[in-house]
Structure formats: C-alpha cells, structure tokens
Length: 506
Image 1 (cartoon, rainbow, N blue to C red):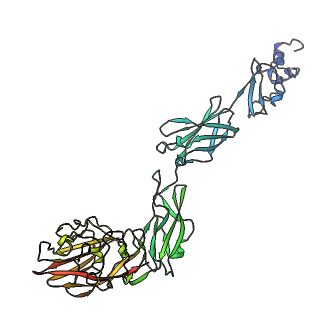
Image 2 (spheres, rainbow, N blue to C red; image 1 turned 90 degrees about the horizontal axis):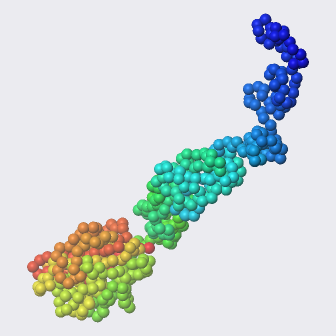
Image 3 (cartoon, rainbow, N blue to C red; image 1 turned 90 degrees about the vertical axis):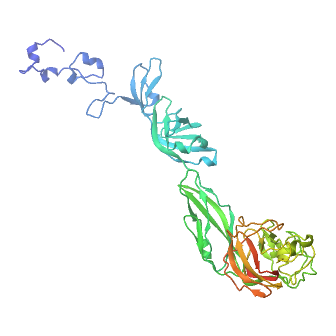
C-alpha cells in the first residue's frame, strides 16, 4: 500500500475488508507480488492457469523448450508426459500406468513347435518393457523378446512349447522399465490342430449300385475338444455319398462302366484349428454271378498239384480261373489263396495213409479236380473212410484270400463219390478265424469250433451225387472260406471233387 490507513477505513460495517480498499494492489507476473498485495487482486504467473474446475494448468512446451531451473515442473508436449527438472539437470517423468487392451492371437498351437509372435495393443508402453505370461496356477515366464513399437504397441516372441494345456488360460502382463505394469487376464489358450487317425489315401473300394457299409473317418484333438468333419468341396455328393459331421461316409453308389476312383479332401475341425487330409474312394464295376473257378478238365490221377502255398496255378490251366484285382494284396486267382495249415482237420485214410500228407494240393486243388482220388503223395483225396485207423467223421479246411479280396462266393456245385454212408457239406465265410480249431492235419482234431463263422450254406447232401447249392446270400467279401464235411454211417466212404465256385467280383 502507498500509505497507512486507519483500520476502520479498511473494514465495512460487518468487519469485512472493503473491495474499494484493494483497488491499488498491483497486478504482477511475479509471484512475489503476493507479499505486497491481497490475494483476490494478485495475479499468478501467466504460465499458470487456475481458473474454473478443470484443474490447474502448468507450463507446457516441447522437449527443446525445457527450462534450466531446478524444481521446474512442466508438461512436455513432445512426450505427452509431465516432467520435473532435477538438481543434476536431468528430468524425471511422471509416467502413467500402462494398460493392455488386446493381443492379436489368443491361441497357441504348441504341437507345431517353434516360436509364436504376439502383437500386444494397449497404452502407455515405454521402451524396455517386458511381456510375460501367467498360468492359471500362478507360474510365470517371460517372452523370449519384447520389442517396443510405440506407446500403444509392443511385439513379443515366445516359444510355443512354453505353454501347457493344463495351465490355460494364461494372463498376459506388461512390465514397463519403471516397474509399472498391467495384466490382461485369461486371454491365452493352448489350441492345437486335430490329429488324423485315419490314414491318407484310399478309404476302400465299394460296389456300384450298392448302399455301402459305413466308412468311419477318425481324428482326435490334443486338448480333448470335440472334432467335427466336413468336405472342403462337395465331391462325395457327386457319387451318391455324403459325409456327416461325425466323420461317417454313407450313401448309395450309382452304376459305373468301369472301376472309378474319386478323390476328396476332408477337414477335421476342433475349436478354431483345422487339419485337412486327402482321401480316395473307388466304386467298383462288378461282375455278378460269374463262374470264378472250374478245374474239372484236370484229372486227379494224372495231375501233379501244387503242394505249397504261394505257387498259384503252377503252370496248370483250369477251364476257368478268373484273375481278381486283389487276392492277398495283389492280383491272383482262387489258387493264389493260402491254406490255413493250423485251422484244418484232414486226418483220414486218403490224406495220411501210406505216408501221404495234407497241403493245398490235398485240399483246395483235389476238391476241384475230376476224379481227384490218387495215391500219390501231395495229391491225396479230400475224403474219409471209416474202415481203417484214419477214420474221421468231421473234416474241414480253410482258405485265406487276404484282407478285402475282390471277389465273394455265392454258389458251389460239385460231386462226391464213391461208396456208402451219409455225407453233408457246410460252407462258411468269416473275417476272423481265430476261434477255429485245427491241428495241421496231423491227427484227428475232434469236433469243429464254429464261433465267429457265418454259415453261408448248411448241410448240403454230397454223398455219391452231383450237388448244386443254388445261389446263397453273401453280402460280404470275406477273407476266409471254410469247407466242412460231416460223415456218418457204419460204412461211410466219400471223397469231395469237381467243385466249381461262382460269385461276384470286381
């Protein structure tokens, strides 16, 4: 003030300072003016604004405009952060807490190996920060590397093998260089692509104009998620088939003029992961009710029959011997099947008397020749005589044509001779011969075990007569076929010959 005043002049009737008494308080940019005037009429420095309710504004400028006085506090418009000058000339920054809003990939495919690159988005990131991951059990590991891209983005690289399915979901954490951190919870999961159980390639051969047996495709998910199946294109529909979401191929094929192979691709999906696999299916052009085998032009007395598996026709030329596309894994005739040596009972006068033995010549071949009875080793008659030490009332043998043979038998004709008693034949098919008993033909095996066998034709009278089974139902391309003969009577004496086989093939 410029002169002293009486205290009474400064106050109004209520004892408050009169506004008029303050009219000569100087305005100033210098905060020291506060010591010489009253506050209502004093001015703060012009780089501080304290009006309104929004907050007090302090000095603002770029990094280049920083002051040189210790203790100065300002807003750095270059960095977007508040800062203060230290006594040593450095600046300390008031850094806000970081936040994480998202990560570009939330599923880790650990089965593929290698590294996973994750782009993390948020705010207030600074150089030197580290990304880490926290399992549901609290265990933590750091990313192999964390690259600062900007205040709103960092890129982390981490080994996929670091993640364990049992510890999902994982939190993702950013820790800035100043120790401030942020966590986005339950965001990372292990999700591997499903694994195929069904091998790529052919799923099988089906017959034309046939309702097929279900072909089941299979795949599993490492995390135990449900797997669904779909075609990448609608190829199967074009051949009358369809694929269900459970992986079942069903339907009815159309007619084809020749064997037709169709390629298709199936996608197995579990969660968001997929695995594709390529397959083929063949529709076979089928020849029905054909004569498959006829060796009645060959005389048993004068024919040296093959005496071991694997010899096939062995230079013999039957009337009919259809070559199939698949017998034991390759093209072949019925003679290319194998006698199952431990699943037969051929103990009899005709196969073991005089040192003879039992093999494919004494069984398959001898039953198809004309007058097959012979005393030559390896060409014995398949039959039985009750008059000696080798009598046997139940005899059988089994032929193995391998997995998925390309023919099936639907009819037999033949003849049996020559003496007395009763003899009946039963014809079986099966894909599992494990329960059938036998003894390599070296002794009488007793009764025949039929568990697992399907009787295609039963109890056909074959004693001293030509016989024809007629066409019987056989819907399966069996791997094994079994011929059984039961003989009875006080003087039975029989031998099976002139068998002709009929059926379907492709």
